[in-house]
Length: 221
Image (cartoon, rainbow, N blue to C red; front, top):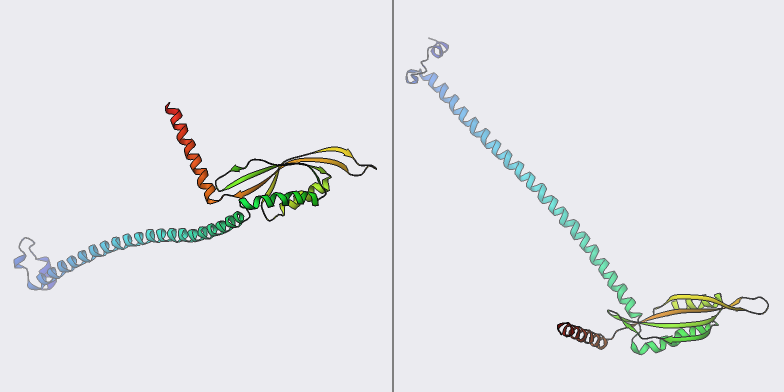
């Protein structure tokens, strides 16, 4: 009897009587099927795990890229802060201290005289304290022509200390003989700025604190 006949005559309900070659073949097929199923399950699991790892890697790369950009921006920001601090320090150095204010007022006056102006008014007003400096306004009234006014404004702008001009008002007074340039009067506010000394700052803070306490007591009453 051939092997094919053995397969055709197999009794599926009684595998114990199957010929040995058939049993061996069936066993081999079942074993191979089990191995294939196990391999497939393992491969699918590994693929899913690999896909998860790849996704996690992509997320980590995005986080890393974001952190690198933030780090680069932070370095640029630090450089900008250094430049701003340097510029701020340079500006503060241009502010006169209390002992230098008198000299600065003289410089402003001499700049006007050197420009050919006639001073009608040169009146420093009370200073206004700010956060780290005090503002010193000066009321000015001078007589001259446009050229002299321009020279004066340019001159005080070129002083080593910061001086700014505000509320400029120019009006004609009269004309010179022969129809030359008219005589004009310029009224303006020149502002200079004084660096606050540490003692002055502490004193201002103390005054502000006392005012606040007085206001609270007044409200309670």
